[in-house]
Image (cartoon, rainbow, N blue to C red):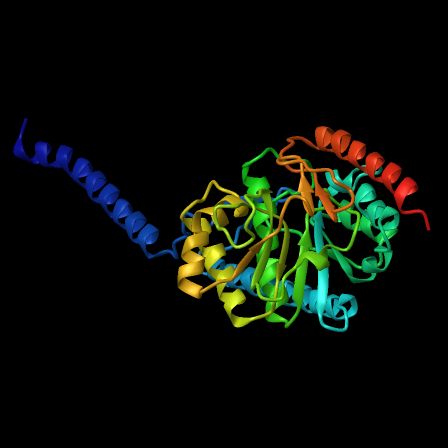
Length: 342
């Protein structure tokens, strides 16, 4: 084969290679010069099959900021409503009574009904209902509250479902019991004293008569050892009275902050762990009330000549609490019918 024929054979091959390389170069340039779509911009199809890009990464910070601002606005609006309710509920010397309830405890014939009934069956304490705010932790509890009481406040927790009965020390249980400490702090910051009562603490007489003027903080006890100033008494936060002092506000802040040290523990146990710190750091004066006056099932003393309240603590489960506290209520009614005839 001559050199001329060889050259004629090679020419098409060379031309094809040059053409392919040129086209590939154009393709590379096109791809790398187009605006990139970030990975987060995933394609979603609507009901008509049209493609829509989800929010870009640049939009996400704006969205998060908007959510934060909305949450803050809702919280501020809610706090304004609560502050207005405090004003309506307060006594002349700016004291409010407070309890919390969720759907399980607010259900018909459940604990809320018994709690409110105890004021009517008590010894001249029905007027105290005028100063009681019931904090509902979910919408159903709020609706029930509004059907039986005039001062109801909806205090839903974002990200938590607090409507049903909660297992002891579960996350939702801890959110439920710690939420009240934040409310306590807010009440003090508004300049009001409060007496908090668990909704499973029945009222027979006015418990204010057992609160000393010297104490910053007054607590019920699970077990009382005889001295109201003895910090070895076992505290119970089912009944708590506090004055609106700067000291008490700082105490509650410190108490809430201590949750980080004991993340799987309820507010009562945390208080018991830090009570000596509170006394030392803030010179806190605490009064622990005898179980003879603020009674319970932990150290039961059912002397109805002394009892002002009786708390269904030291029993687990709503059904068991209801059964036992109903028997105490019946004993009180019998006592009252015999010895407190009007």
